[in-house]
Image (tube, rainbow, N blue to C red; front, top):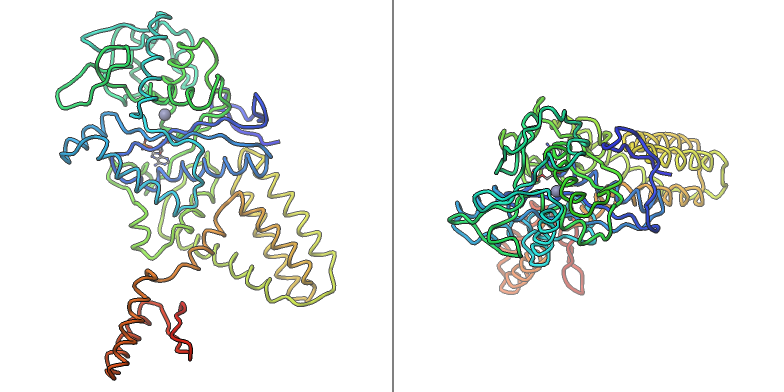
Length: 471
Ligand code: AMP
Ligand code: ZN
């Protein structure tokens, strides 16, 4: 059984879903005002590994929602600066996020709601009205606030001192510090240059926190949901406020297990846009690294430990992946037919160790160590001519099992199989070269061949025509 560290209890707990075998999980998604950086992607990759482990180690079904925060202080400011409507502005960043996620091998969740979808805004309006009915709100200057003094459990997740809470003082901004817990805004009064809706609360727009409360319960069904996840910075105020809103509105527990991913750091500081120390996938590519190496790096340490990003770390990740891929290629060369118990034992041990590591609060570092042990032992057995075709198939099968959870080796192999340049461009160049040869301009034809070779594409002339392959 998988054990997970629950931020709510500060303890590791055996996990199983509450209703049937399907885990209902919500993870806070990106605020779509810029390209997500690799710190954000540490959280999304770890949540993806959690999702895969729940399926392939826990044997559960998963119903996961990851939202796009497409209306908040930052998205509105971004759209205004760019001079485009909010939804157009956020749409482009959603597209980039989807591309980057796919490049990093992140599985698409079952639900990817946008906060400004009509059904979601309606659910937010309904939740605020329920909170109003239950006596958790007040109105001031056209905005609606959550009165934290009305909710006795406020501060339980973040372990706040109730004495520090300031009754009746309110905060309008989405983000604020833990030293300053105040009544937070649920619905903001209309302002010049801001979008405005009315779903029963009066005109205005939602605060950030109400979005996740309303969307998670709308999409995942009756509370409590099984798992709520996000980066560690979201514990306060975002998740504390989500609990207050959801529980204040439904009078039921909101989420059973809270999973928080530690930060990615650069030179001792949290990677964040406001500090200006961010890298995106394009900087990773510009340094000659592929997304699979970043995925490897991000999952190579335990999700609850801080991880310091360095280029040397990226080189090591490349090296580790190369070892895996070379090892799999070596397995393909095996032709012996005497099955040895030695490899069988290695396979059994590695399978058990890998599983135990992931069951232990998703210890991916230990899971990778189990794979490296297997690689070392099987390499030694191959050196001793002690591996058969059947053994090799069993090892390969185990690697497939590993990779269903880690999603990194298949990603590297898919990258390897990708053409070095767009196929249409290659085909156009082949046609141009053909035309040059027909008009007997062999210098031009050669030039095209060389240009393609420089870009990693080799041409092979056959009687049936010209074929290309990767260099
Ligand atoms: P945002 O787009 O700012 O709402 O953040 C999206 C997700 O990335 C949230 O779950 C954040 O907690 C998480 N996040 C932000 N910065 C980092 C970081 N440096 N390391 C890991 N996760 C982060
Ligand atoms: Zn959220």
